[in-house]
Length: 409
Image (cartoon, rainbow, N blue to C red; front, side, top):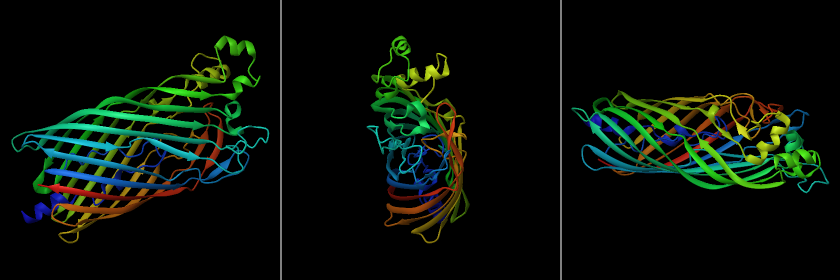
């Protein structure tokens, strides 16, 4: 049983590295919405810090170089759970599941370089932030309590700022929207199976979509520029500025997590994640109303949307070298969310490879650290009209993470 105990508590050396994502590698996916903290044995708590730095460069359709547009990005994740008795468990998780951070600079079609423009030298910029708090109640059942069902409410907060600048965006050059922070609610539900004697754990987790109804403040200079005929402006009720509600529905997702012991000191892991980004869109009302002029229909265009769903797969091995030290390695693949893709995040998925280590400082406390390297898929950037405006090739990035955890059986 001594070996079994060490195998059970091995886990992946740096869980944060196995789920870290990069802006628009697939939609706006960031944290991977990991819930493995809740599935740990006994009383467990963790604090995770993740830092992401990507190098995303390319060219616009005029042949101008586009310097690195991906701003470095960091976020935290926290989790705590405890067993009420041998049947019921409760937990609370915090993460920042979705986001984006991109900034165009230099001499290219994504920077306003008109010396007569009040936005001269301003570049296209996007920042999206979300925060989620998940409460979970789990119940074990079966002869040996091997099965567990769990679920609970999710509170999520989202805010966004987007600036479109430069001739790449045609008439939308100068468009700005600020989406105020909004909090709304969804839920989580899942089922897990464990077989402690071989360190086997498997879980399938569903998170619902969450519909936000926020306030968006928009500025669209083209409306007051005279480029749109006055009768059209009047008929559509357009103005240069508008404050109106906007519905943003963050997507549902399904996560599958699996681990099993290979021998008393080695653990194999697998993760699969699916997110239907093809159902996601950001549709500010003024932007949409103006776009109806060019589309000549009553649907118009979304400011941000994706063509494909995301699939993410990761395989790993963790090895206990001593009773206190374990190391891990993993490889991964992310499908991306389509190509061409929005110019606000021109990446088509990635391949990844990571290494990490976990050291048990005491019987209860441990610290983990590690890194992951990512090779991004080449992508062409497009604006909402589906016009190709840029080409991004041979890009990469890295992820660094640190985790402090506490566990008492």
